[in-house]
Length: 450
Image 1 (tube, one colour):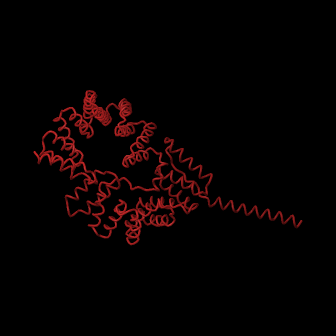
Image 2 (tube, helix red, strand yellow; image 1 turned 60 degrees about the vertical axis):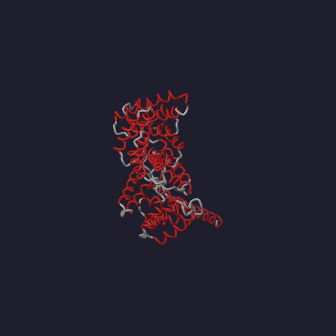
Image 3 (cartoon, one colour; image 1 turned 90 degrees about the horizontal axis):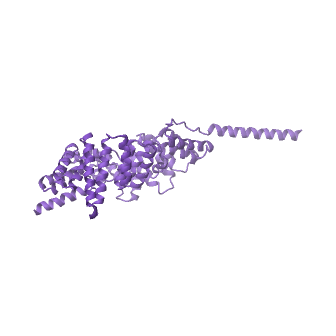
């Protein structure tokens, strides 16, 4: 009996211990966050629900929590994504991505006192040389914005390993100089970034404020900031991984624009095709046509435009893009001597398409510019000059319009007015664009020679 009681007692103790263990696991396993999804966005619903299912199957694994967080963050569900990243870090504390993604999202919301400890921790656990510059850059930026300049200085020094001319290095050095009151050093660093792809609105806005002692220069940077409209974000090796999970419609359009800004036009076309196939509305169709025109894929561009115009016959931009497609196709044909007649017919059709667009919106810049170029190619120079003058009148802050008008005037022999507009183009252009200055020097030389 004693032995039997011992065995029974041992089994009961083990069962109790197991019950306590499983109860502890159940109580300490975080719940999967609920997300309010747009049920009509089928790809997004499927992706989120699959990631949630994976977490329920392996609720104490950092990888599944991290993937769910990335899916949510990529599709703008930021607070529940941060919750997932915190759980991912709990179960996978050696992966720098989880504290970094939490910290970076908080930094973007200007919650610096919460972001900085997470970015510090991400840097401390980072063992991936590929990710360290990204973390150092964001940490230095956050520390400067928070006024912790001594620690920021150390991060800037570490970041300098990227190379003294790396844009990120000049950016944080410019921020640091500005924070320490060294305006000349701040301007020197930030000026080197004008014309780069990234943060142009922010950079030019800062330069305008730093140049308040020179009204002309300040106005120049204000105009550049206005022309930039939105900032292209700095490269980020960790946040970049989110792109693979970005399926919501608004985010995918944002990704198309980012691909175009980075010069990945073919990838932008492929993504734009997917978006237009899933949601064939006019905006998505015209986004695709713009990219197809850029790649000179004219037959597909024409088919897409015809479909769009069947549904929206009075859409001015669609008519203007049809004219642009005809112009570009004609210019491509004109390179072959035997196709001159066919090219001229396309130029005439382009003018007609832009006439229709301008009858719907008489200030549409793309229509005026395309019409002017087609008219020039047809030898109708006075009409072309009229359109370009109207375009400059409507948007005098755009360098490319002054350059187009200046070159057209020069070709027409009106050199005095041409040089004035080319000088305006140089003044308004970003320093990294050499074309306005090259055009000015070309025609200035010819004017002096005559």
